[in-house]
Length: 319
Ligand SMILES: [Zn+2]
Image 1 (spheres, rainbow, N blue to C red):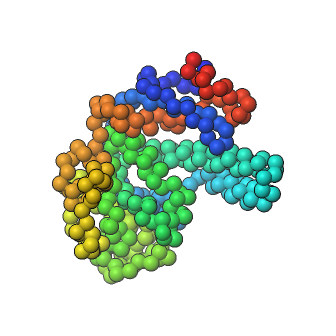
Image 2: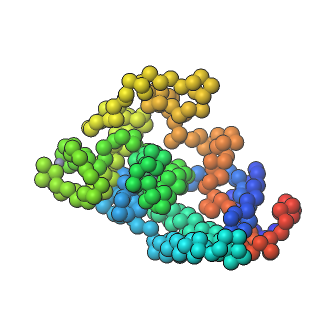
């Protein structure tokens, strides 16, 4: 077996995966030591922009790179072509393999972009705050497609472990925080803020770029949250989603209770260590090791070319 790079430590387990494009991957679980970056003063909030991939509190806007957009376009074209081929035909099978390969390329390009963008943000900021969008909650809205396309939650995951690895503060902000409606200059809360409003002027006279204003609010909320001991902040600025009597009464089924996510009330009362932001670097539990295994960039180290014929049988991989 030929190694493309050395592992940082002896792996505790190896998983072999074959993807839809016929490529084999070996995924290793390894321990990785934290590598804190020198402390800096800058902190940032990040808003999931509607027109951009992400918008930072300092006004910077991050778009997905051209290589990713091009790969995505090509994927769409191939998908269309494939669906036009007769079902069950050899041409259809060929076209579908092409689609699968392009899918894999898009996934690789997106992962590469997530690593680059998140590394830059982590390097340039001591603390990073993002809005907890609970992407699933958006699945029913028109936003859904753009959210999924942008791979936002995957990106936030990469951002979180990189921040942790390099000794940065990372926190998700309550998703009912009215980041778009709140004026970051005077704290005034706008009544409505339709999605098509890109810029607005507050009664205080300050003109806002919608996404940058939101990012600034996320930064401020993140600082407050961290100052308060990382508890989700209580009442803040605007309205929270009112709790309906039904929700208030709802107690989880005892059997399900252990796995259910903590309610806000519970989360506030939970000791800090059980919150997901904090992970003990010396925790050697299986879960912790698996989480750290994500730290290997491209945890799946490809060791064989993409042609199925060239791949050795799985049994040989253990040699
Ligand atoms: Zn204002």
